[in-house]
Length: 387
Ligand SMILES: [Mn+2]
Image (cartoon, rainbow, N blue to C red; front, top):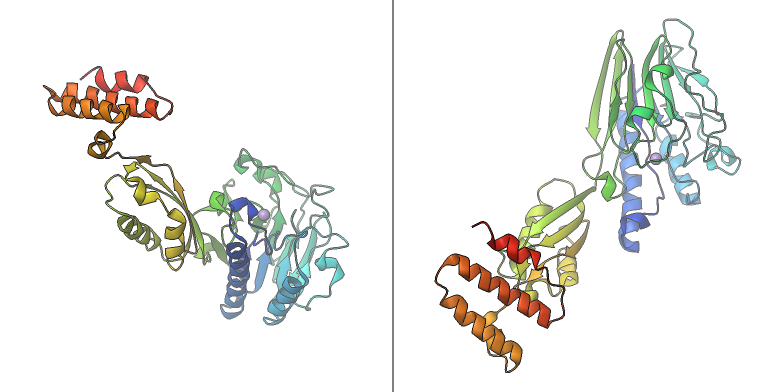
């Protein structure tokens, strides 16, 4: 028996949280459609015996009529492949949901209640058990209440919820459950949605497995790295699960020390190398640190524009410290110029490297204090002391 398991596509997601521009968000929403399209086509070509979608296919509050038309057309195009949907907390089965209000192709099965229902497929050789969120909070939690008949069929469960031991500490839990209580004898596979990263929930010895496929493409910088869907093969007592890369865009966060770069061209070259590190286009946040000439980072928006073809989206954050031209400052016809000139001479004539470091710090602190910047005296002692 072959299954494809995906979840948490979040069609029509907003992307405001990732700080993207309206243009970038439009491109990201299209990418989510393209990713789902690829998974559904793969299910038809492999071919899978069923496509399982474990909730959060779209966002109820934002889903457009056109996205509903897209889904209907997509699912219709792979008939008679069964498409089984267990609505989650973002796409609950409520009266106003397109799940309830629209008619769907006859190969689409949508669970409607917060209690277990079953659908028999493949002339009764495959039974998929699932439930639906009936609101943003589920009215009754069905985990632990699954009972199966013991017969020759392959039994698979499909649902959306938070396994307690793997719940991210800052996340709100929905339909919480413990892995062991979710088990039912003769269950082969539990296809879960809600956690956006691929996660296997370890279960006690037996021939069943419990997986979160994760979202097939990330939705923000907190979902960086590769995303997949799962190809599951159940062959008698054998169960094989293959994660397949599905994301067409990947969120990445980089740090780049600019201290050794001579010009903005070096910065561009370094950013281009980051862009080619992985094969899929990146939605990247790059933080620059170290020290450099102010001219190197004076127009980062221009660099973002210049690299529009290298990155899906690029946001450069400047955390650099400016390096100073002390010879230039020494020519300044002010008391600051006189101060720098004097320190430059003392540094040049310093009797040893230790004394030279102290004088360099004194010059940096004097300059910072002249400009009204906060001066961290502790760093003077820390740098000098024990050498
Ligand atoms: Mn989700």
